[in-house]
Amino acid sequence: MEGRRDIFQRTERLLGSTCMERLKDIRVIVFGVGGVGSWCVESLVRSGVGHITIVDCDKVSETNINRQLMATTLTVGQSKVEVLRKRMLDINPELDICAKEALYTEETTDSFHLNEYDYIIDAIDSLKDKASLILKATETDAVLFSSMGAALKIDPSRIHVTEFWKVNGCPLGAALRRKFKRTKRFPKKKFLCVYSDELLDNQAVVVDEEVSSFYQKAQVNGTIAHITAIFGFTLAGLVIQDLCRS
Image: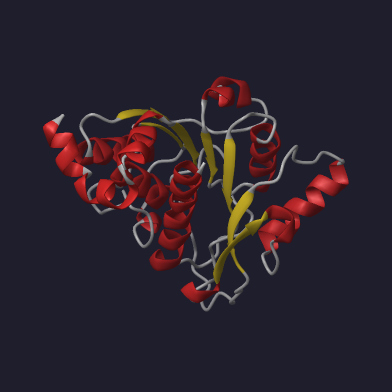
């Protein structure tokens, strides 16, 4: 226990012992540990969260190295969640971490037991699966925080947090709202999103040979580490703020 107290000593000075105990006890699940989700997990674990589940179906590829925490030339081809799990245990050996190499879909939602968590983090790229997770998560007692699109952006000052229906200037947010209205299925409660109203153009067309065996994205857009990391850190910050002020 002494070692664990040393790890989080500076955090406890800031947040206090009561909040640190609560962080140790809460259960968080993060869907998608790519450019946004991987940094969110890192921040949560370094802040003292004691129980975390990470979900992603992909392997590390060379195209991940520019922005994803666990992606290096040495981890290409390895399971993203397994590489990230090992890193998190290096940070806190007492961490209770479950790595699920799986794809969240409407068909697989029951396997994740969302009602068992205090916080649900949505960092999914797929529109269909993201919409399904939002609908299911808002039916639970858990607090949901969601990342909107982090691609095609370089200005960190334009990253904001707001309630989902107030997100503006984000094509992913707009697409989700259209989907909910078209299907007449809506989130059961309000939830906060991290988003940016900046939208740049791709400056180069590059042949992307990365093909997932689970799904293919309709379009591959340019991304950069400082933006995806700020999105992820902000999601983690929302968890900590919510927990410590409640």
